[in-house]
Length: 74
Image: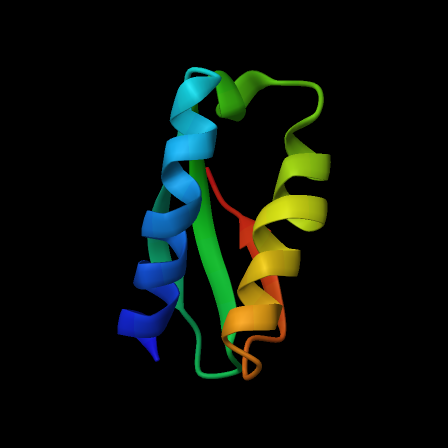
């Protein structure tokens, strides 16, 4: 499953990079929670939660239905 998650992040990454940000996969837990680290502009952006939940998590759940949630870690 980690490979599937990484593939989705690789597809999302160019959109984040256009705005000066990036995303790094930290882990996929045993409970299928994806933990990521938002970097660059995304790490300090006031809209980071919207990017995480409305963008990354939404796409991740569509493409990898086993994913329960996507959470940001520092």
